[in-house]
Picture (spheres, rainbow, N blue to C red):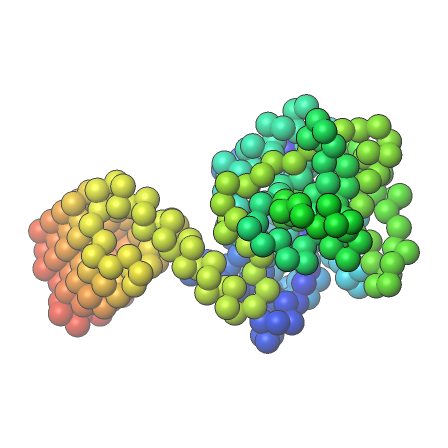
Length: 331
């Protein structure tokens, strides 16, 4: 059985917004949705969203698709995990995920789950050319993770390490709930940190390992508007490159935004400044010119859409629409 704990309780003060941080949109979709859809592709059995600030908004948005746990007050990442005690007693593996990291792929999580067949605790890490003031991953000669050392506590040799913690974990669920009560808050912030699990698992004789991400950008946490824009650009490029490889012509990939849920047929040509939202399905050999907006619509084959807006519509084949036509709900 696979479970997941998604830590989505933070306000995100650096967003300067009344909206909960994880409800901000990346490529037109809230972060909470991106993570949920990735977990469903992994066939995760139990998904718990730990919420706090803006809890009602997240609950209303997600509905009954997931289970919710309330973290109030918010006393650190370890404290957030403790709130998901509905998972106590389950066998299997549990993914612990930061709700502001929506770009991590199913492939990366699958690598962690594969390693978890052998190791009871698996970290996700990334190697940076300049690890700056991030905590370092300290391994033994066999490659097992011994500890995460905060930069201020690093020896000169540890400071040279370029592998850092991404804050994502895969853990044996029974051992997780056995050792969580041992996490202490004897630090300046009086908070409980999930990183302490590394030391606890080692202390109890369990080996800990880490999966190194192939793409540092995939690990990016979103804490402010600049990082939100960067995440959207990264995902936009990933989606656009996928469709280029499927035979779709995108004239200017920097100005075309395509939903992760959209489907597009080969030989369709998309000109600059086009946005394709929602569960839109576009057939083959269409031409979509500058400034067009298409949302939750089905477009057949061989159409020409000239600078028009199409929402909740179904278009047949070999039709010319536009310029400057606004079609909504089939009208």
